[in-house]
Image: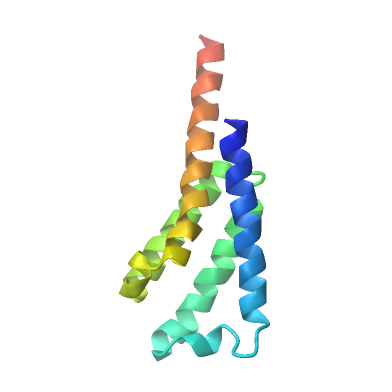
Amino acid sequence: MKVIRWVARVLGILIIMSFVAMHFSEDGLSKSYGLELTRDILPLNWIITIAAYILAWKWERASGILILTMYIIHGILDPRAWFVPFWIIMAIPGFLFLVCSLERKKRTENKED
């Protein structure tokens, strides 16, 4: 289970690094979206997702749920995101954090019995 946890953490760090690189690129994040709604909402989605990756080091379950929720919201606002490999990769650590937290919960329940 430690391997899954560290894979999720490393992927989270790589995603944070790509966010920073895109944010400080010549075009910037806000210019990559065409619609007004998505230009205003999706960067907020990014910020919440990045915060969830950071918080996942402490609260895996809550952060995993938040990451997957942000993926779903992003997919609703921009349906193309469901099939873009980058966005799918962003959801994988959220799923892995959930798996780790549920496994930890199961282990603690078994120790109590």
